Image (cartoon, rainbow, N blue to C red; front, side):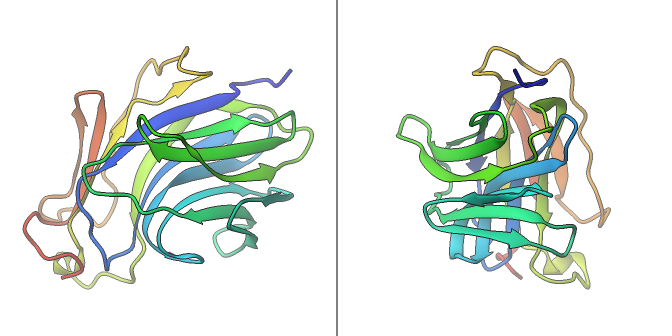
Length: 209
């Protein structure tokens, strides 16, 4: 029996499409006795290209998926699985990460009320446990350096409150944090009904402009 939780489930609603800026709406978690992983939606993938869903775990041993599965390196190393996923502004998507036996994890995604798609499966060391009791939902802009706030395309997404073990365990607390670059007009992290809204960039500014 794994120490820790066997699944996380959460919803994500993109409220803008900031393309051509690259943004990642991600949920990061930690495995007991092991490393971290993350899953979410991106606006601008590289492999595959276009809108994608992605699931990765640092220091994983391998994995497989219906479309893309490969090791990654750079900010640490690990294994990543990804699928093309044409998310739409205003639609709500359910994402999940769940144990598949004692040494593998799988992630899925689908519009709420519709069948979910497998993003892929990742294998980890046999000594790693289940999901730890803390996680982080974050928004990352990865479309090159910023010389000013005007370079930041407007991105907004609503993250729901995550739950563990099939919705039976809810968080007892949370904290909102806005990282650098500080002071850009409009950027904010704020509570909203059912979750938290992440905003980056200035409303009304053209995406990528």
